[in-house]
Image (tube, rainbow, N blue to C red):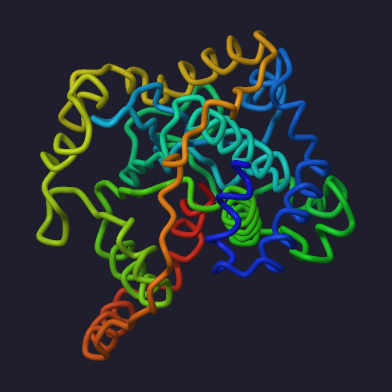
Length: 330
């Protein structure tokens, strides 16, 4: 029932398309053995660099909620190391996080979650689910998995390769994450917040957002300390102080060390998986998903397009494509 409620509006209320999406998701869940993600030991097996080298996870469940009891993900993009991203292990890690968040939404009887992504540089190296942070963040050109053609050798299926192409770069890995997350976990977020984005990131994102629907654009928010952003205090309008790290104006110490929140999420998921139960959807209410007819998309004024395009040309935005799109692989 949960999947049907998600796929129908995502398919623009077309029953045939909704059926196709559901069948596609069932195939996806078999290819990635999604049920095994709820078995005991799954969190350590999938999230740990020791047991799953190359996973390079940089976001996870915060373990907290907003003022409306809705869970949210938090991430620190710079934790991921482009020199050590394994194409399919990274995809698997992202799916693992999204799968458990989707189940948490069902168990909490809420319609959706949110996501806060900090894209600023980190002073210390990561220690848990990735090898980036601080001075250790390397270059994609040195990635041994891409050189060994792991995108082909370790693919879950030939059909997926035929559909998505070979993920032999960070950009192509992100494309796989975007496609799988958006297709098989549709509309699970109501707000996506980008913290501390520089002008390069902000400009390209504004250009990109003109080609998505108005409903999708409304989900994106920039928060920071520049004229482009809403103030950091805005976070406290959405989340209680105890749910936010000290660095974001809250009272939590989840960023001590820099990826402490990843260790907490892994431990919580380990405990959840050891219980060996999927959350039941029997308690879902008719209000679980806010279903509304999509409105027509609208384009931003062409003057804005021209300004943003000029800014991007001056800043050389092409160099920012890979790190930006990697963030969308949430």
